[in-house]
Image (tube, rainbow, N blue to C red; front, top):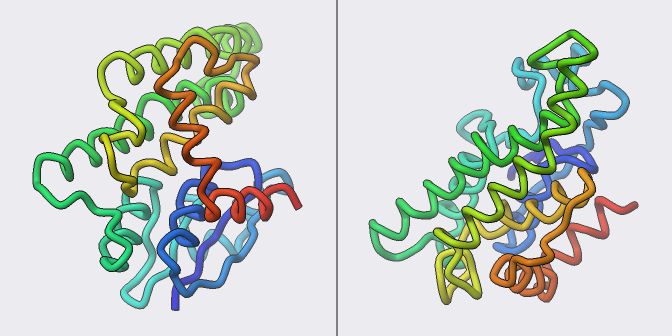
Amino acid sequence: MLTYYYSRGSSSLAAHILLIEVGARFDAVEVPISDGAHRAPDYLRINPKGRIPALQTPDGLITENAAILEYIAATHADAATVPSDAFTQAQARALCAYLGTTVHVAYAHARRGDRWANLDASLADMKARAPQNLLSCADFLEKHFVSGPWALGGKFSFCDPYLFLLDHWLTRVGASLDGFPKLSAHKAAMMARPATRQALAIYAE
């Protein structure tokens, strides 16, 4: 049995979708970031990083979206969300790494700027630049990565739920996927999957 620690409105949506998609047996424990629960002593004893998401497995705790997504995929092989060849597996990891280290960080500058700066002017500048930076990331993904209909071509894989978050991040900084036909088609394909709709319903409660 797995235990998944999540928060509504956070990037934990990605792995939540995949857990449902692969038919994983898991308990979901909400740790509301808006209430500061991710910084509470009880949660810090579970995940000293104080970040969401986290996945408790029989072998120990896994943190970071990219690692959680790949673990879920690798331990539910029947769902076939791990690409079958080494190159495409590497491409999936590369996409997850880019989403985690570049795209997600660009979004965090608008919502979690106090991780990097204290001055009001610095925080305001980061927030103001977030839409431009995220749109630049979307442009890169549209032109150089996403082949469609899924992130890596014709088959759904473990990186697709993470890419799905791009639309949410853009929306929350006042931007959109307008002008990005491949990314818009990817969003539509994700929304057509029952697992996506089921996870979104949890996050909307």
